[in-house]
Length: 237
Image (cartoon, rainbow, N blue to C red; front, side, top):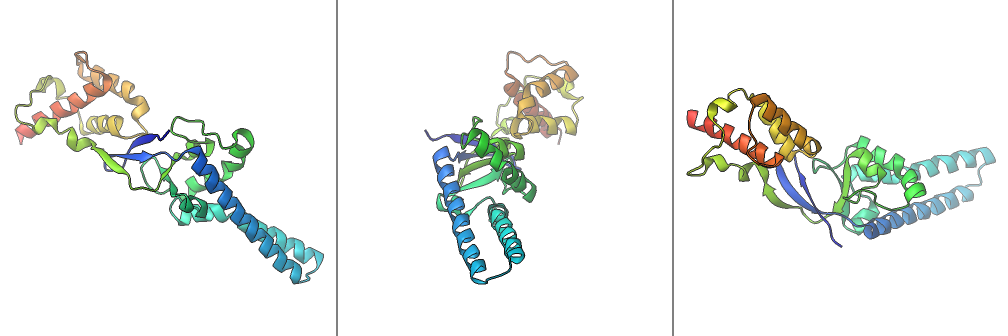
C-alpha cells in the first residue's frame, strides 16, 4: 500500500511525499552492500598482488576496509540524501524541513544502522516508515518524484482577506496577543516539530486571552484566532 506523507517545509508550504516502502529500501541496501563487497574484493586482491609484509598488509586491509565502510555515509551526505542504491530505486532521505540531511543527521543514521539491522532488521517501526536511525536523526525516506504542494498553508488560511469575512472574537479580546504568540500559533499549525504540542499551545492562547473555543477543535481555534487577529490588523492599516 502506497502511503502519502504530508510535511510542511520552512516556507510553511505543505508538501506531499510518497513514503518509500520497506521493499525498495531493502533492495537499495542490498545494492549498497554489494558495491561495498565488490570494492573490498577488488582492493584486497590488489593488496595481495603487492606481496607486502604481514604488518603492512594488515594495515592496508584495515584502512581500505574502514574507508569502504564509510562509503554510504559519505555518499548520503555528498549526494544530498542518496546512496548509489537509493539512486537506483529512486528514493532519498529528507529532513523534517524537507531538506537534504546534514552531516550530523547522516552520521546518526549511519551509526545506528547496525542496531536497526541486528535488532529489528528492516522493519520500519513508525507510522511513516521510519527506522530507529531515521527517528533519531529526524529524517524520512521518500520517493524521488517531486513532491506536490497540497496546501500552501498560510496562503490558504488568508480567510481574513475574503470579502464578508466575519471574526468571531472581538478586537479587544485579541489585543494582548504579541508577535511571538502569532509565531507560536503558526508553528503549532505548520511546523512538524510543534504539532504534537498543538493542544497545549491552543490552551495557552485560550487561557492567556480568556477566549471561548466555541466548540472549535484546537486546530480550528488557532486558525480562527490567527485570522481574526490578522483581520483587525489589516483594517487598522
